[in-house]
Image 1 (cartoon, helix red, strand yellow):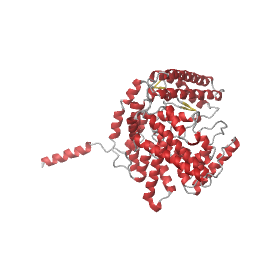
Image 2 (tube, one colour; image 1 turned 90 degrees about the vertical axis):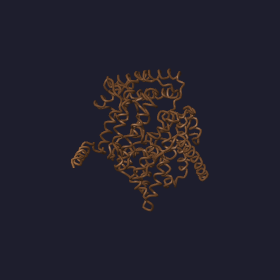
Image 3 (tube, helix red, strand yellow; image 1 turned 45 degrees about the vertical axis):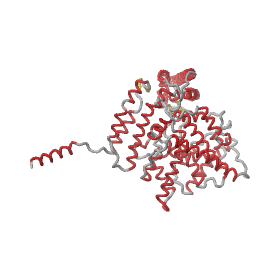
Image 4 (cartoon, helix red, strand yellow; image 1 turned 180 degrees about the vertical axis):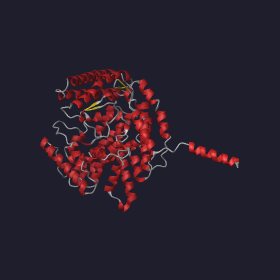
Length: 531
């Protein structure tokens, strides 16, 4: 009897001293701490990307992973489990940056931090140093408070670029060669800023001039150093596979993606050929000719597009969607056209479909996600299969839904767009496998884009490949995400049967937030998607 009572006491003591199961709230608390941690330390307001600082920061990752692993989400609802995996993916992205990419040591364009226009993504594409100066967020003339804020951002630049000369030790030829062009673009942006702040405080004007001088000096240094850089710039197939699986959460390997991109490229060219055959007796589309025609047709295209979505019950049209598109119309460009302008000026409705990006950003502002993990942008461009994949897939989805039935020549444009995305994706894959240089990737994309619209003498083709070289998986995300979303749509159609509604599908799709499509699939269907 005494032994029995003793056993009961021991058991009760064990129960009372055992830690309580971790909760979803514990995950949210960890997430908040994690987001603060992953920012670099600062010295006198300048982010510290020195080898010592980066090594010390990376050395703490195991402790963060252990804390996350101690939170077992298995019994939680699927959306909460998804949030756990999002945090895990961010930690993997942090790890990849420190082990493989190391942009602060390998990529001069990492130190470009002044941007004129708004990105259409939740966060700016590619890796960049902390403390970006987003000029599009400022209204000129500046208020005193905003002038102080802008000056504070510009003051960091000379010291950051001076430190970069010590931090940058990589030997990747293409990263250095094309990084210099990105730095020169920052100088041009600062040059355009100076007249806009001419009436501001002398200290702000001085800060802008000093930032430009430092940028020019850094660009010249990068160009001089680039001559001696002869190493590869890609991450290699093994690292690319790891990145797809653990950061982008894509259920494909590098080899799988090559096969898929080759298939989509061939499919795009084949369907374009059939469209052209069907439309052979129709007049060719004439590009917009002047500013008045541009404004008139762009505005009319938005009206028609929104009406199509509403009248066909494709999706719920929110009040913020129409103005979100109209704010992005821009000005007529009378000069020689780049690829997307060739498309846009032949039928403005086509690129409005890809403008789903602006719906996404407006939704983040007007209907923020209830989960703090998804409320803002995910780190390391983890969102791209959803954002770029859906915007790309939406183009062809709207074609199939009938949006271009009365403009058959515009159907050709959809397949030209798809061919361009698949061709440049193959450049991404081959550059990172170190099977092609950036120039060779640009030549391939240009050659395999129909009608010679992706010109080698233009700026776009190399700028895109440069981004994809800096950010693995970005160039493929447009088409890989499209393929995954098509699979998700098909799965929901099978589940719902006759009760399926595209509008309801889009409601749940948008409500889930800007997360990898593999996790969207899990949350919406209950089926895990793994490699």
